[in-house]
Length: 220
Image (tube, rainbow, N blue to C red):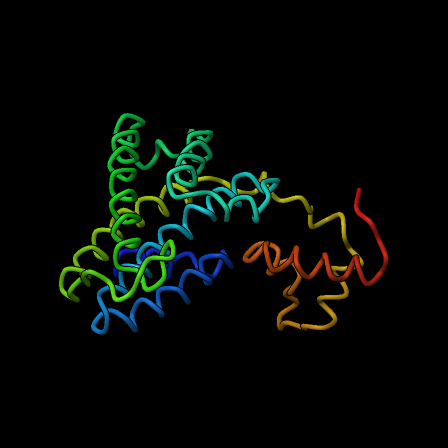
């Protein structure tokens, strides 16, 4: 997953969800030269996680549990719909090329899902032992192809300004901001709360949720 890792490394400091993907990449690294079947499973999980994050980031009102219940086809169809709501993706490539990309992606996801079902250790209650396993070299090629497609999917999402999805405005919570700044003092008059808000909004909002709950404050 070299290309995806490079892109994630550039942007992970600003996006907590990318840090979660980094941990998944670490699991993939452990399987790269070990077990072809498990590498297929991890590759599927990686690109699947990207699709789920696309939906949750672009439509924060969606229910995460419902998203987890979607099969691969419906999951990537919904992810595509979310992506297509934003013209900024055309800064990556023309809309016609993006359409061709998603067409190819759908074919690959179908292939990857079926292969995972065939070689997965536990899949649809099938009888063991498995009829066949994927060799490590073949699994590596499949993982590399998944990496390239994942890179484009990540790039499309990162081109979209997600600020409109932020339900909290920094200036509306001065008491909480002061609370954070007192807990984490930074040199040269820098504001920890401001830095957290700008660089990791997810972490900021989680801290704010906990703070408001502790104070018994309900946000309308």
